[in-house]
Length: 225
Image (cartoon, rainbow, N blue to C red):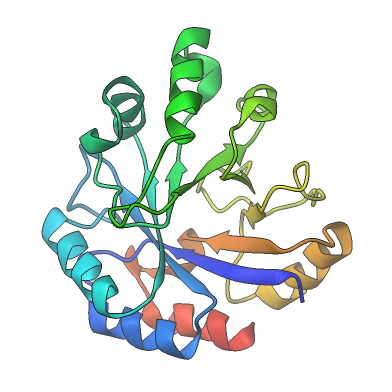
């Protein structure tokens, strides 16, 4: 099966780090994706710096797959000041939630240049993720090596993925948009028909109950897959 990774996004301050470790040990294909926004840190689905620190410390003892999604002002801050301006070093992948069509061309070029040189705190090459949508698509042909592409026209709002495209020029390609416990197995089969290469899936809104990350829903998805 070409599905090689499932990125479950949105653990928050109410989420047990120990339970994330437990599930990752049982389902090693899971990637825990943490949301980061400088202004929203510690609210809703954006965990506090203290929670992230405890999660990152747990990852030192357990080889968990993990990503951080940089949102809001965090992206232009990174583009202007470099990787030390955002807390990304402890993560193997960084998703940049950005609308590049709103940027000056020179700023886009600087942003892409920075992506090409990222490393983790252990000095390993760090992968990035850029969303494919009508705003970003014109810039994706210039992506440097080690940048993955996520098909996500919904922008994290749970809009169901309708048009399933093949891999973006053989890059490691992800799929998001309305995926969740009710349809994930069916969607895997549909994606496999369009994409014969290894791919990943990302889901967020469907894993929340009362706007808290729901570990039971996350485990249901992992069991189903």
